[in-house]
Amino acid sequence: MGQINPVFGSIVPSQQQLALQNNYLAFNAGANDFAQQYLPEVYEAEVERYGNRTLNGFLRMVGAEMPMTSDQVIWSEQNRLHVSYENVAQTGGAGSATLEFALGGNPAVSNAIFPNDTIVVMNPTTGVTLKGVVKTSLPGGLGQQVIAYPFTAANWDALGVGATNLKLFVYGSIFAKGTVGPVDNGLGAGSYKSIQPSFTQYSNNPIIIKDSFQINGSDMAQIGWVEVATEDGTSGYLWYLKSESETRLRFDDYLEMAMVEGELASGAGGVSFAAQQANVQGFGGGINAYGSQGLFSAIQARGNVMSGFSAGTGISDFDQVLKNLDTQGAIEENMLFLNRGLDLDFDDMLGQISGGAVGGTAYGLFENSEDMALNLGFSGFRRGSYDFYKTSWKYLNDASTRGGVAVSGIEGVLIPAGTSTVYDQQLGTNIRRPFLHVRYRASQTEDRRYKNWITGSAGGAYTTNIDAMQVNWLSERCLVTQAANNFVLFQQ
Image (cartoon, rainbow, N blue to C red; front, side):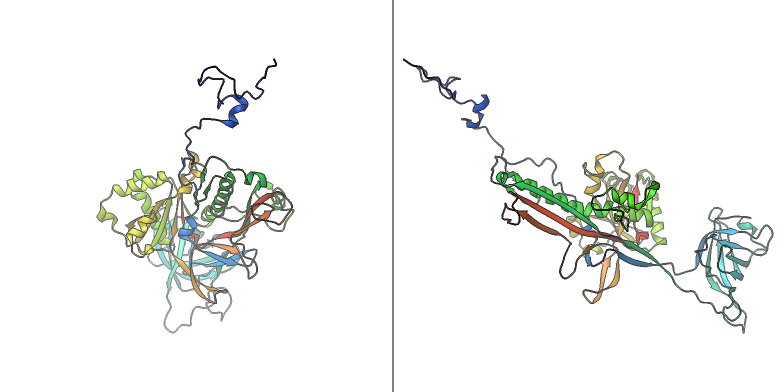
């Protein structure tokens, strides 16, 4: 009689009804694990061990988004109203009754001081201050000079003979009875005083940010036993949903991170712009440097940087910030976005002071609603004539970004809540916009603020013969940091 060998290894007959090792399908028995008989206890949903992993939202709190139709955005900012010079040198020599200033030794610095102007001259190192009246003022060239006589001294020696760090500013003028108005200023008889205002111009370039995700048609039809769930609410048993969703969430974060960390190519280190561009896909020996100036770069270039802020020194460190704000725009309401360490330092600093010394805050930025401020994660305090709303900035705490190293270089940023009034060509009216805002490329036929499209032949797309679905994202934008002199960057 012939014998049957169980080639599949599925059943071996037994004389008794027993659950033997060789008569049921074992989960760990090599090739048989696809037909597992006893199901394990499965937690179908992933555990969210990192909480909400997205980082964007910062610019939505402090800025706005506006369209533009050019490769470059240019804006101008006012200069100071009053006539003032720093790094002025005393060149008249010892015992001289006149004072000669070489105004910075820079031909780009124009001489806006005229005869009969009254001036204040200060030595910031020694604290000595003298006032005088201008006799002669010579404009233009490297030899810009002012010859003036002091009111209360025989000469200018008290400022320091040969001192080069003096500050000078005009506070008025003085004329004799019956004299003509301010004239001459080295320009010849009959020329009258006239100071033409100038402005400072800045610009930034939009950058194109792209990302994509691709999944083949077969894997789209493959169900898994893990239920995916992401921060945007995507859920289901198709793993590609998680991949697509996380790619989009990552792209959304990149839109903000690029505006914060953006940097312009400088050609530094002997590397030309063309050489820098040649290293980036799509850039040949181009006409402009690639890159875009982000928030950190703009503040470092045109704003205020405070290093080594410490709660151990009490409120004195922070008062230095206030004193500097007084010299700038003195915007009353400001927001503080801090990493956890500096946030706790602020709490310690405020804890050392009684409530009356700090004062309350009006929460004007949040429609005078403290609940609204708290719901957005802000806590407020008042110091001097300023209101501050502070919050912990996740971007500076996250281990996958600047929070992942012991010393990241940046601990926080102070952003003014002020706005400027401009004429909007598209709306045809004056609008108010915050100092910090995003410009994106758009026209009547193309809006590149946030583009999303699907190509391929799977997932509902029928555009190519590729058996896959490709999801694409694109945005073209740049950050405009206006009045950066009112921003403060806290560094370690």
